[in-house]
Image 1 (tube, rainbow, N blue to C red):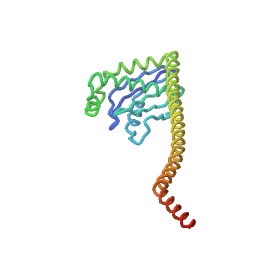
Image 2 (image 1 turned 180 degrees about the vertical axis):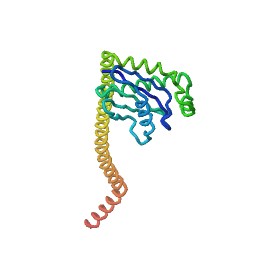
Image 3 (image 1 turned 180 degrees about the horizontal axis):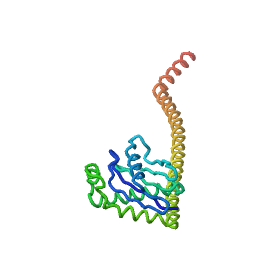
Image 4 (image 1 turned 135 degrees about the vertical axis):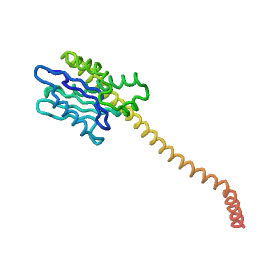
Length: 220
């Protein structure tokens, strides 16, 4: 399986191409028509489109990804693994954005927004070519997929652990709620008991006095 054949980085707002590189093979030539099709595809993308998508084009597939104010596009053979293509775009995006931060610091987004000419960042081309070479070697491809799967499994385990921890916390809250309900009943009974005791202390002597008077009257 051949590596990505064409890679372009453009500004999301108007699809201005900032850097591009191609890797023609003995079976596929990156013609001007192919590059024009890629530009048209980038121009057709809007904010309502998904951040990631793939578009079939005969024996090839375009893969698109948006991040921050940049969009990344690559063209691969139909047989190229979909997950590998998106992984390639993610690594290209990481490398390009890291280079932008190193060159322009925190103002890199403004630098991209104010870029006035096409391919203003063509000096990033070697970065993309290096990534293409990494994704050309089958052993490297397998290694990267395994690393990606390991990362996904790690994220899944973390999510499961968080869910389980939330379950334990919910059980703890439920137990506390039951204990509070029980204590509330005890408090209610205790409050009633104290009320009766207070009334007894208040009216008890009077009742006893009245009872003594009645006994005296009855005896006489």
